Length: 241
Image (cartoon, rainbow, N blue to C red; front, side, top):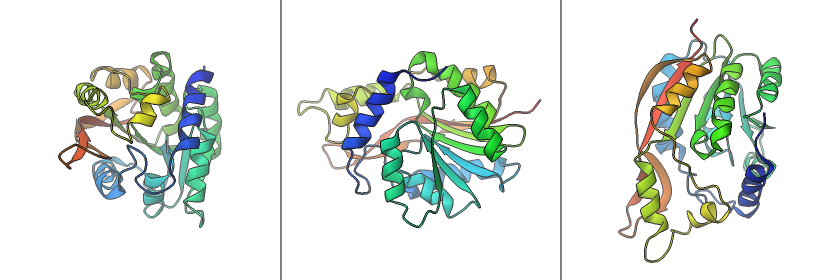
C-alpha cells in the first residue's frame, strides 16, 4: 500500500511554495526547542547509538542536520521531492543523506532497511497528517525500519491540539501566515485519538518503552506575541519479542 496521489501532490505543492529561510514553515522550529529536547528523551533508550539515525518525514532537513552533528550516519527521508530539494540546498556540505520514501509502503521501507540495516527512527508529526487508511501501514513500516535493534521516537500532536489549531484557523483575521499555506494545500492535521497511536505501534509488533507529554513549539506567534505551542505526546518503541 502507498499514499494517495492527492496526498503526495498536496505535499509537493506545499514544499514548492515554501520559503527557504529558516523558520519560514509553521513547524520548522529551532532544533534547540525541538530535536534537542526529544533527543534527551530518546538517547537513554537506544540499544545501539551507532545505528543509522533515520529522520522520517524530514521536510527541509532542519532537525536532520542537528542529528547529523551527533550520530555517525544520518538519513533524512520524505515523501516530497520538493522537500528534499530544500533539505539538500540547506546542507551543501552533505552532513546527511536524503532519500525519497513513501513510508506507507511497507515494501519501500523493507528495501530501505535492506540497505541501511536496523535503524533508530525519529518521526515528528507525521502520523496525524496521514490519511486514516495510511496510519497502520506507516506503523508497520516503522517496525520494518527499526528491525531487531533499532528504536523509534515518535512525536504526535495530542487531541488537545485540535481546538488550538481550530481557534487559530478561525480567528477574526484568518489563520496566521504560516498556518494558512498548510490549510490551503489540504494538509491540515487530522484528529488521531491519543490511545490510537500506541495501538498502531502494538499492532505493528512494537512495544512502547516510554511515553510522555511535551509541548510542540512552532515558529508562529499568537496575537499577543507569544510563541504558539501545541500539546503533543511522545513515545519510544521497539521490537522486544
